[in-house]
Image 1 (cartoon, rainbow, N blue to C red):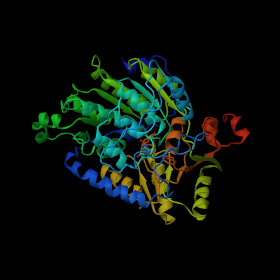
Image 2 (cartoon, rainbow, N blue to C red; image 1 turned 180 degrees about the vertical axis):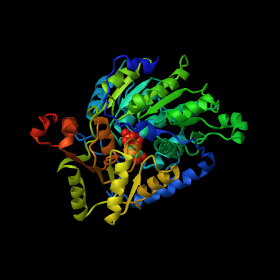
Image 3 (tube, rainbow, N blue to C red; image 1 turned 180 degrees about the horizontal axis):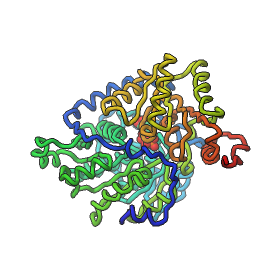
Image 4 (spheres, helix red, strand yellow; image 1 turned 45 degrees about the vertical axis):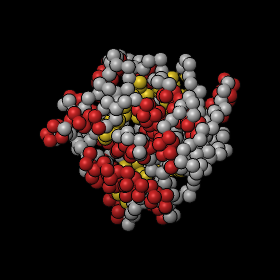
Length: 503
Ligand SMILES: Nc1ncnc2c1ncn2[C@@H]1O[C@H](COP(=O)(O)OP(=O)(O)OP(=O)(O)O)[C@@H](O)[C@H]1O
């Protein structure tokens, strides 16, 4: 199970990946347990405001992809009684299940794959019989219909199967794993950390923790976001701490440190989730992820991996640490979300990018806008230019303090920052519902980076737009992005597919 060795034995990777990634993802060991009580309140206030800045004025309904845009009837939000009344799950035979999956573009691979559920109210009855408090929290979240990944992943995880799930950005993967974990933990006795969720960045870990707080409210299940290192005083309370929490959320480095320092006890863990799993199994993180897997060797931990992208190499690698896993692919594999209108814009050379951006701004921008650049220095440079132009702009990268990063993300979510310049730090997982436009000011160097970056818009069924600037220096990579655009239904000129690499 030595993943690191296994990968070194012949897998090939794109060496163009960002050198700064690991540094960007490095954690600051700061423990913020004291602030946890405020999280729910903050979340509610933020959500209220989010509703107000819902630029699309859309409902919280996720469509099942381009081919099936009909909305499903709400079953949960219409209820007025305290408890959720079950509806009968109509998917009783193989043909129904196959048709249902086909309609929602769900593909499954593996043996004895449990069928999907159709609507949230199905979860109230057998075979799921989910906790009423959990169902009420779901109802309160105002989600009318489960997304395809939720429909299929929840039953698989409830059936205690290992899972590798690939579904588009913004398609609700977080809830797809949180729901079954919470369901399972409700059924078993409290004995400390029983689920472990790993995410590549602190920002994403925080977001998962917030979603978990909302979904588990009133269930007595408690999560612990591992950030700061424990003080000497904290350490005297460790046995108590361990009993208090059920779910541990961490970045890989912080977790390894905590295990080495005996700050956490993972002996009772039943579920191990890797969010942005392909990132965690890639070079920058692999050694750490391997160490985490090693900590569980021999124990019957259920593993689940989620991402919007899985290269076949990473997929093969992931399979080696799973037991009889099931694979789910929703939509086209490694494609961009179909609600995003994607464009490529030739700017000639470097200077042309600034000209193009200024032209765009002059026409009148529709904030919030996220602009991706390749490095911290370039982020700082562009920030100066846009401040000079009088734009309401901020910049986020790993040189900024933890407090600054948190504040910028909050301000951007609240619509107080209109344009946010970001490095790769922000490319994965972060959920900004209202982002209208993503500009790839600097060309992304991998397909995965492209898909995750533009996936910060067009989330949860909303429409979004992405513009990627390219110069003659980017021709080497143009074709792969064009292919992704095509596969997600965007029109691209034929000549772009036959672009030759620059000499
Ligand atoms: N059933 C649902 N109906 C409507 N909205 C939902 C539903 N489930 C989740 N959402 C919302 O959709 C948004 C995107 O969800 P989430 O962040 O889990 O996406 P993701 O698939 O993990 O994306 P990424 O690959 O970018 O990490 C969130 O705001 C979430 O609250």
